[in-house]
Structures are given as structure tokens and as C-alpha cells.
Length: 328
Image 1 (spheres, helix red, strand yellow):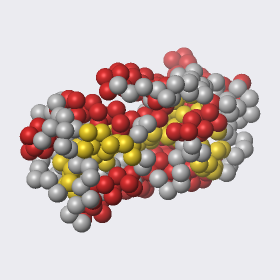
Image 2 (cartoon, rainbow, N blue to C red):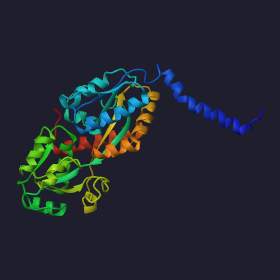
Image 3 (cartoon, rainbow, N blue to C red):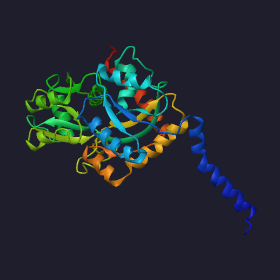
Image 4 (spheres, one colour):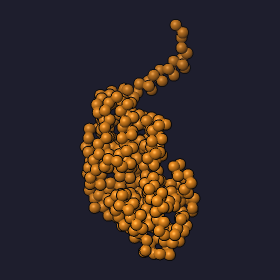
């Protein structure tokens, strides 16, 4: 039998221990994961972008885990019903929360007494995708670029409206945007994107932050024009559309989707979830499907996602205070 050199032997033992650590940790935390159905809770109705992406990922995770993976939609109370169900679930990784990160970041901004603590009750797992907003205006007014829109709005103070979906991050993002540009515009809240599309088509509102594909029908019909994206660089799905910063406007706003588990979920299970979900997101076919939904595939460590949520929460608290938005 060939004798291993001392250094080689130590490296071999270290590698074996490293490979076993996740298995040992999972065993210590209880039954190996997953050992039963995994339920993904989505805080919105079926058919929306969060639901669609959640279902795409669920189908691939089911293949990987050889356990049923189902999506359960729990809209209501501005997403509080869904959040509470995850916060009160067993901390075993079999109930997951798939949502826009802004929902978690703004829980206490819009709700006076939310039924969960967004820091204590959730364990970040990984981001899955992100995108900038698209600054959208209507063709019923002259501007076709940001410079002209700003000039036109300043020449017509108090005469233009901007649309928001009340009780969401967009309400703060747009308020900060209008403030940053020094514009006098009227906020008009809506309860969803469909009525906003109708208001854009009839020139009842003149400014909106949309997704890249959200108003494609209106663009094709010549009713709206896309002015810029709100990321810190050009968006890969709209390479011909300049970012605001390219036009000398110091403003950035993006949105992202990701997974969270119950806050007391063992770290070994969080790590297993992080590894598996990231691998699924990186499948070329999945990245293409995510792009077709209007976002870029993006993953993270649990720590990176946690830091993003903390930064978002601080930004939105400060923004809500400046915009005079009070929790209800």
C-alpha cells in the first residue's frame, strides 16, 4: 500500500471533513432536508410577476429535491397574511417566503403594528432576480427624453400627475424621484397596475415607474414612451435605454425578488437552500425565463441579502419620513 506524505494526508483529511460538515450539521438540526412537501408562500395573487417566477423556480426545485414543491398564494392585508404565515411556520425550511424584497423592507413603514418582525422572524436565503424601474411618460405631452420632461414639468407646476400603487415601495421611490428633480407634481394612488395602464392611455397621469415589459402594449400602440431606467447602469434587457445617471441625474432605484425562511431555521438548512436555489437560478434555461419576465437573474449569500434588506429598510424609512407617509 502506498504511504501518503504527511502534508498530503492532512489535506485529504481536511477535505473529507469539509465535505461532511453540511451533512453533520443537517443531521444535528433534525431530519435531513427536505423530507416532505415544501410550500412556497407568495403574498400576491396568481398570474403576477412574483407568482410566475416563484412557480418557475418551484418546478425546478421539485426536480432537484424529489419532493413536492408547491406555490401557495396568500394575498391580503398588503401581504401581511403571507408574511405572518411564514413567520409562524415551523423553522425547518419546508415553508419558504418568495417575495419582492421591498415588501420585507417596508413592513413597518406602511403598517403601524405588523404581525411579524421583518428582522427577527425571517432568515434571508438568496436573491433570485433584480431590475431597475423604467421612467414612463405619455405621448400626449411633448417630452421624449428626461431633459425635456424635467423642463416641461417645471414649466407646468401642479398640472402633471404621477401614478403610484399605494402602500408599496413605488410610492416612496416616486416621491423621492419627484423631490430629487425639484418637480411640483400631484400624486395619484392606484390599487394596481391595470388601472394605471388605463390612466396612462387616457393621459390622466403623465409619469409612472413601470417594469420593462409592463406597458409593452401601450408602447406598441404609441400611447407611452420610455425615458430612462433607474439603475446605476444600462439594463441588459433594454440596452438602448439610458440610465438616469448617464443623463446627470443622481438617482437610483431597483427592485428584487428572493427567498426567506422562518427566522429560527438552522443555518445548515439555510445553507442547503441557498446552494440549491442558486444552482437552479444559474441554469441557462432558467436565466432565460427570468429575463423573459423582465428581470435579470441575480443570486446572493444570506449575508448579502440581509445587508440589502437592512439598507433598503433604512432608505425607505427615511424616504417615507420626507414624503410624509405614515404607517396605517
